[in-house]
Length: 219
Image (tube, rainbow, N blue to C red; front, top):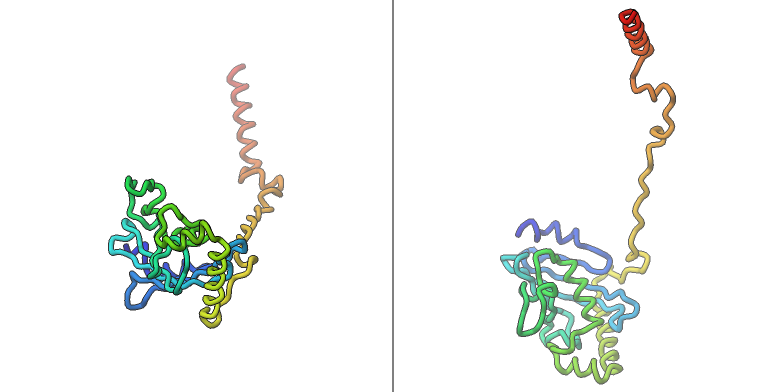
């Protein structure tokens, strides 16, 4: 497990949209800060605090995810902040829920793929089997009220942003273009001397002498 979860790897997962930091006293417990940067999201601008806990047999078993930001009204968030999301369910098909193995946890998933899935779920909740039934009904039947509650949570969360932190700009989030690879200009500008590949005039003379000997023998 150490190769998949260690202090150094936590910092390598930093991106402008989220920060991850393991608890110094418990490396299986991570604190997170998630920025919702999608401008089309009702949660846009929210800074959501959360916690992930990893089992001893990670990555063969999934971690858990719990929001620490209080009073999040969302169909897939329990009252205590625990998140219900397919990617964190145990591997394999589930006949009861109808979830396919491809939707659930597997060893190829990592912290970053989980966080992306969490942010996507915020905007596209699963309301057929909600963790919070009231929030599911609100989302389905009274969307304006649901959106108003979400925006209120966004405003409250912004008051709890750690000092020195800010939401990243669109420019910071845009993928950086790959640096062009310079061709070796000298390779395409070889002189006639370089084309000889180390050959010499004496080599050519040797071939001529061999030809003369062959002619003498044939006479």
